Amino acid sequence: EIQAKISSEEILETFLTVLSDKQAKETACYKIEAISTLADYMVIVSTTSSTQLKVIADEIQKVGKSSHYMQLNVGEPVDEDWSVLDFGTVIVHLFSREARERYRLDELWSKGEVINLDRWFEKQEDADPV
Image 1 (cartoon, rainbow, N blue to C red):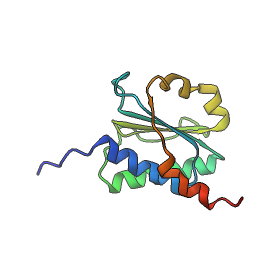
Image 2 (image 1 turned 90 degrees about the vertical axis):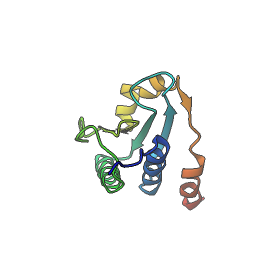
Image 3 (image 1 turned 135 degrees about the vertical axis):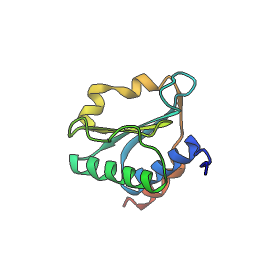
Image 4 (image 1 turned 60 degrees about the horizontal axis):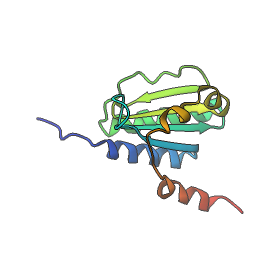
């Protein structure tokens, strides 16, 4: 049986929900299909600790697997400061703040279309005490 193609947008929305639920910080998303053959979307996230990085990476892999998304890499962390999750059309980079500043991927991919993520993360901000 041939499985219907899963859209990049469906994968992206699934992972943005995970990132919101797991309280990822400084999430940026770039639509890069017009500037790169690497993927359609690049997501870059800051985490507050190596533990949070691992928890988010594990959850994305679990949800990806249960949603039948094909992961193209094993998802093992590059180190405790950086993990790359490659699902073909959507690639998620989880960084410590320091590693994100060091590797500066935002500068590289900001030539793509910056995606407004307010609808995924506004509920998270509403939950923060003022």
